[in-house]
Image 1 (cartoon, rainbow, N blue to C red):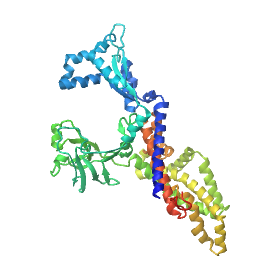
Image 2: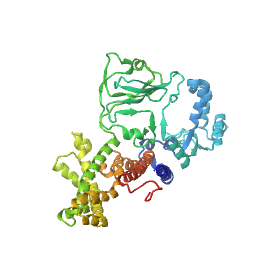
Image 3: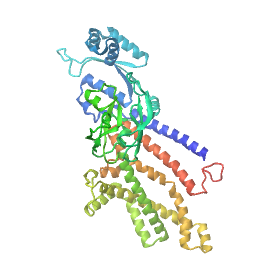
Image 4: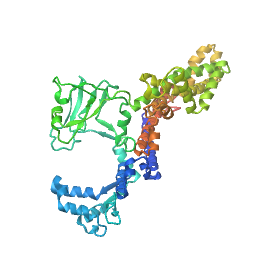
Length: 527
């Protein structure tokens, strides 16, 4: 068992790396990088050299290259010499203006320093000449620029992604010399009434805490960095996107940290468990509200998150499918060629042959007109009712599949020699079906149970799109349409990991269900 699990884990890691490399090659090499600007309104408003500089800045964000700008070089150089007043210095102004003369800019000392510094690092230097009108005045967006860039290979990008995939907050995260007290300790949490693990010097103040939202215990200590969205969600972490509740803000009676123990309450949606460090000096108002520099926060929202919506719908649909599909499949097998079997086969043929969109719209029409169920998720006055149609649409498809396979495996087992031997021993048909045929037929289906459950986390693309469910089902398709590279890679990692885990869990469940199957190669019949 241990050797099997070790081999499985190592092979799974290798498979995941291969998939990530393949996706990164596809996204960053085979698809034109200019595609990322197709839905970028800011890019459309830029002109001439300003547009080119914006493109390089975006290419760096998306991970295509490393990019350095001459203006940033000058800022770093002169800020170290003169401090915050560097922009008023004549030598800074002269160096900044030097690149606006395409004939003499290379004579400038700072330009030479910039060029030499980045050339040694392997960067390519590019000079964008000023674009002028016939009068000699620079056109809008036509100022001269000097930049340096270096392309990132897929292997460097892969290494960066893997090494930053999981991060842990430490007391050295905050780079502020004014912060002298650094610690991680357990304290009484005034917002939950229980205890919490809090930190100083960490990015978040509350590292481990309880609240009234499922799963009731939360943490900001360990972070899974699947990537960042720069198109649809504008710089947001993808893990935050899929885990953030999709409902409205929820206001409660609460207190600012500096007001704890007083009679001053506020009716606010601020979630003080999300406080993060802000190195900018506190304002006078913030000094009255917060006892330290942990002043940045997010708000509390109601409802389920994207991944929770998908999982709830998928899990309920899966349970219904197994609870209904398996018994029906058994009944069809026991009444082979009977009326029930013919009706069941008719349903199976219908659900397998008709396109998903067609039967989803059919069930949606029946549900909305006859039963008055809400069609679009956002239009539901009673939110629970909004889950009915998506669940039914998913379950009815899976029910047909389980009916088909359970019937087939049952019939295969009915013609086996051990069944004939059991009949010869005088066992009743009910006992034969209950003790022998049904358990053996289930062997072929047990392996897929973990995959069905974990697959609920990925959502259902068509179903969620039709019913406008705020889930993760349409996340990948929307990312592909919008060329959102971060989400494409993140979804690939997420889906692949779930697939790998479901296969391993399926093997373990199968070995547990059938003692004849061993995961140890030392035993006969081992896998």
